[in-house]
Length: 99
Image (cartoon, rainbow, N blue to C red; front, side, top):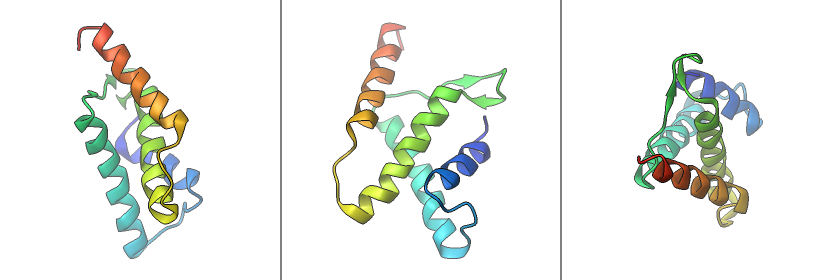
């Protein structure tokens, strides 16, 4: 998947597939912020040549994190347990592979 593919899925997930202007810029910032935050957590996103870019598992992780950034900012809720677990599992998997 490409970052553009992840963007389309993310916009659908948060219910804003037709966002434009300032709102789209904000959502794009959340998407790229999620990618940066995942990297700062020590996770190296993998690429999958058969999918033409980001692996499906990492694309889902990016989507979940970006959605949390948008929804969490609006509600001031802590990170959802399933996202925290997914990040932990992904980092643990990477460490076990020697990454």
